[in-house]
Length: 284
Ligand SMILES: NC(=O)c1ccc[n+]([C@@H]2O[C@H](COP(=O)([O-])OP(=O)(O)OC[C@H]3O[C@@H](n4cnc5c(N)ncnc54)[C@H](OP(=O)(O)O)[C@@H]3O)[C@@H](O)[C@H]2O)c1
Image (tube, rainbow, N blue to C red):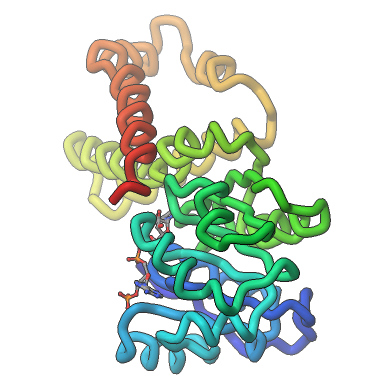
């Protein structure tokens, strides 16, 4: 995945006082951290990230220009807002590790799939604010989709702060925690489904004679444009589809093939399967 270019900001950070830790700055954590830097949300000197391997920490520290180490406890000691981005099965051990540095004035934002706010509250052993989020990788370009839900001890201002983080990198929705695995199956995993669709459309373009680079551009821009139409007009997708589908024209022939191939059912089943898997992840 291409890294985001982060230049030293000329203006003060938007949240200059917030001290933030990103524990597990891997693919998703790294995307969020770089996007926060790019958007100048936090002051670089107030960010402390961690990863599992020391050599990776060193490389990332140079690359991002922020403190990156393997010392979770120290990162949490120096932070008020703690983002948890390790793999779901690693979350309980991580919370146990950082527990000595936690207190009720701090706030945890976990974006680990499957791990419930209550499990984190209980591992922390105190009435601490826990927000659970499910972002996705297009956050790298400010086009993310994230759903957030709150634990039992989250105050309004804390929820607003959590929402602000994810609004910086895309669109956010608030949901009940019972929907978080479904969000994971739909928008958390969703970019992968859409890349496959775009790749397949490009392949189709090649099949009907287009050069691959042109076919890929047309397929991706078409997916982008169709998404923008849904989001910005507010029209039901079926209505927008109807506007493309001239009676006895070409599109209806294409749609016939899609229906015969079971595209809808396949996508519905993909989200159902991923949701089911998301329910199991915390157990390892
Ligand atoms: N990828 C996505 O699209 C996506 C979307 C939404 C949510 N998530 C969630 O994000 C989390 C991470 O997923 P990912 O895809 O970003 O995986 P990843 O790239 O493997 O990131 C995990 C990171 O955790 C670090 N780590 C491992 N043990 C650690 C420890 N004890 N202390 C501190 N850091 C540690 C790893 O460090 P090393 O690199 O040094 O091993 C790695 O940087 C998961 O819980 C996942 O459910 C992912």
